[in-house]
Image (cartoon, rainbow, N blue to C red):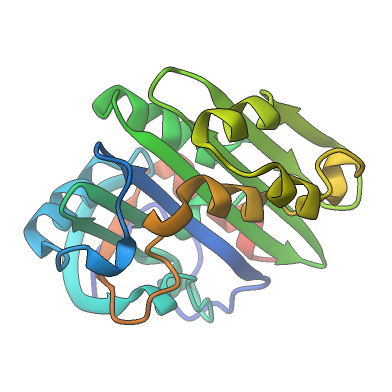
Length: 239
């Protein structure tokens, strides 16, 4: 068993709550890619990507390939929180990490996106994370190479819910049809009532790899940072 010294709870401690969306996609130029034509994941580069995540202190073990259909972590016990999935499909990178979930205090998706922006300044970065434990909390981001960013985080259908940036401007820059925005209720709904993960999907378009079963990531067991571990203990466990 790996040494995960920052945990204060036993490995078999049961997790509360469940994940919804949980992924970041880093799309490097050219952007007009069809995910169905992406090359196979490169496990060695995926390991390098996992080691660079802000939430990860050390990659301990390669577990092996997994379909992107399994990119939403199945969380049963504490040990499940030690698993991250990453992929490098040519010029498209994928990340799934339970430490990206939040209860509204730290915005880990935004933090991770900032680190990725520093390493990949020419990329389009799209992330969507949802966690449900009695109530849902979501965080979604679309960050374009020119610096334009849209970020939404909060409790869907409730307050507080914070939106940064202009989704209309992002949509215009990406050529997203106006009718697609109308279907989201962008002009009429309260921001807390909009499915921002669907907006993130529009930002990826055909480049979105996460719904194609044959596409694979590599799963790794990691030691998360002390801060990420402490945050997950507060989020995923009761009492």
